[in-house]
Image (cartoon, rainbow, N blue to C red; front, side, top):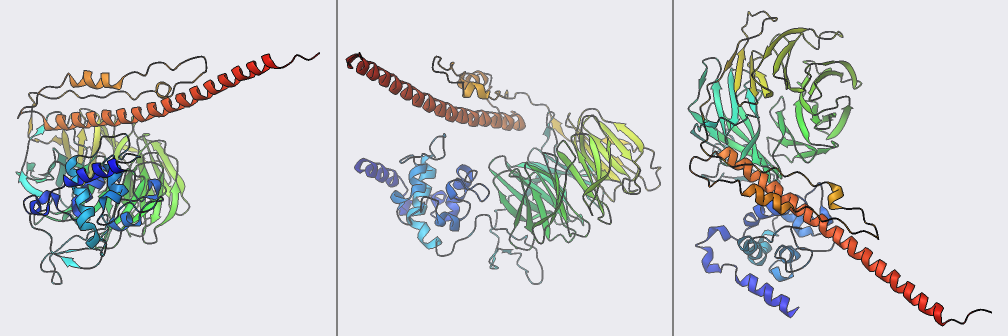
Length: 595
């Protein structure tokens, strides 16, 4: 214990002094200074959904509540705080498990926060995941302030907006656009790519020279508001963070942000009143965020990622579909399930309510379109639209349905809600490659399509056009560049479980585990030195690939350690049995023989 105290004292002495605080703002002692550290290293396991060891680290009040073993922080004393000791690898179990120790700067921030900042903050805890209202300049709120969940108005810090207008950056020729949205009232198309949202006027076929820049975040979804005045942008870092940002189209400025996820947001939809936003997460939750500062609701029943959401036209119900193929309709006000729809065998890619809310249409990667009776949750009709899956679907101005197939074909079908008969095929249009995603807007008269080549196509339907005539799709002239040099991606295969946990027999030893480090070294040797012209998208993908490989190596190491422990236990048992047999033989030799 004396040696441990010396080590702890040495570590805490490395924390910057009070005098250095004025010169190094990165070591402030407030909760905000450690919030990002906890989110990056801890909250993936210690959150409300899976509180490992009954410990939740997503908010200050929950940190103070401690774990099943007791308090995890002692205000003013990091040497007695398990949160610091385990993160510093001074006690066991070392945290994060099977990963390197936190950096010294991160540990210094954590130590300083516990030493000096925690006592005062404990008097007025603030939830890390508290929803924020979207600021707007109104007569009641002329200063454009942000309102938190406690109702106190605080001016938004200047220069801290995560979004800004910037010059359009060319996209890589290899860039695949996975998020696109069309304004519901105008032919304005929003296109996500290379950390920015491009705005294209489909009527004049022109691209705005300014884009909405989100920095180094990844854009996972974009959706226009019901009135077309705002653009919702879901951005974040995979497996680390995800937030929802509101952007004013007329004013060209960031309005505010909602949500604080530990992963990127898959999908979103705005209610009819624009007061609520439903988001789908990788944590198998449908979350209902409030645009007016109310607390969020997390609806849990999905068994896989939530991949599609849609509010009914009256806003009474919201439906969500998941990667497993299930659809759940919810009462968002009560936070309860209304009905569950099962029938798809692939990921749900889009959901659409009928105008009167009596039926619901869904598309899936199983290639089918299904229409459901929402009064009794029974299927009304189903047909196979595309053999390789439906990327998404939308409703046209005529009430007809358009489906975008993974086979590269855009198809239009007669109105799916009018009768019990199956819709008839009206027209088809082939794209150059596999369709990735798309959208319908402008009162159902503008169709946007993206494909696997990175191209974006827009089709306009005239007011007097024949519903059986396909529109002409125009390829958008998005500025691109050809990367001169790029990284080589590493995609190591996941080890088979039989390799990680070999069958253990007394007479045999486990075979040698294939070294994952050889795969990493072999892949890393193919890397080229980055230059100013290096493709940033390729670099990001390479980094993500290496990070996945590292995560896999940590998991492999953990499983091998467990296997080694079981082998050691079996060896001890076998040795003990052998000694018992030897002792029994000796006893038998010295016992007198029976006559």
